[in-house]
Image (cartoon, rainbow, N blue to C red; front, side):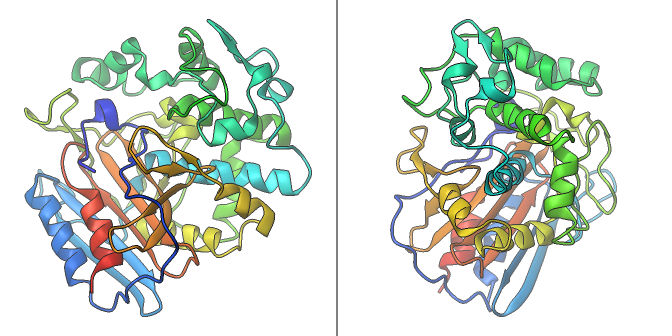
Length: 378
C-alpha cells in the first residue's frame, strides 16, 4: 500500500492484500535485516521516521529509522506512542463480541434496537441494519469522513488549522452521514465506512451505560497491561514519549509539510481515536488471536470474513483484516491512518508472531513491503 495523503488516509483501512489462502507458519524472525531494509526504504521514500516492533518465539525486536521531529532532528523511539487511527476498530469490535458472549446483545440485533431513531434519513434505516453489518462494513451506511464539507474542514490545510481543536459529538458526526444517501441496501455489498464504528461505539455505550473508552480500558487495556494505550477522548496531545506527526494537508503528495501532532481526536471517535505503541499493539493482537480475549465462538465470528471489493482478494471480518502474503503466510490485523500517522498491526493466526509499526507522515512509504519483509524473509 502506498500511504496516501491525510485526505484519503485518515481513519481509513489499508486493504491491499494478496488472495486469501491456507494458514502457514511464518518464517523465523531471528534475522530482521529485510524488515529493517524495508523500513529504511520508507524513510528514503519520504516518511520522516518509522518505529517498528516485532515479537515471535525468538523474543522482541525493534527498529527505529529517521526522525521523530523534523525541527530538532530527534530520532524515533521504540517507546513512541502514536495515534493508531482505524486500529481502534479492532478494540471496539472485541468489546462488542465480549458483550455478545455475556448474553447482553446479539450481533443480529438491529441498530434500531439499541439506537432507536438514530439511523434515519435519505434512505438510511436502522431497522434494516444489524450490529454484525456495522462491524464487517456491509451496512451500506454513508462514510461521514467522505463528506465534502467535512473533508475541507478537517483534512485540508485552511480548514484543519482553523478547526483542529473542534470537539465533535457522536451525534454531530452521525448527522453528517445521515445527510447523504446510503451506499447500498444493507447486506448487499461492502464499503468501508467510519460511520459503522461510530455507531458500534454508540451501541457499546447504550448496552453498558458507560463510555466505549472506559469499556475498552476495563476489558482490554487494564487486563493486558497495555501501559502505552489510551482512548484520549478530547485530549489534543499525544502522551510522552512520542514523536511529531506530519502531513501535506492536501490532495497531493508534494508541497509543504505541516506538523499536525495536536488535534481533537473526537472527530474520529470509535472509528479511529486511540493512541498506542508498537509493543502494546503486538501484545493486543497476539492475545486476541491467541484466544485470551474472546471465547472460541466469538473469535470464530470475528474471523468470519466477507470480500472487500475495494481491493481484489481482500477480506474483512469483524474489525479484522484478513490477508495472505506472497509467501503464503496468513496474517490478521488492521491498518490505521489519522492526520500525520499511518500505522499497521499484523499477527499470525496463532498469535505467535506479531508486527506493529508507525510512519509519522501520511503521504509516502510502502507499508506492505514492511509486512512482507517481516513475515516472508528467508
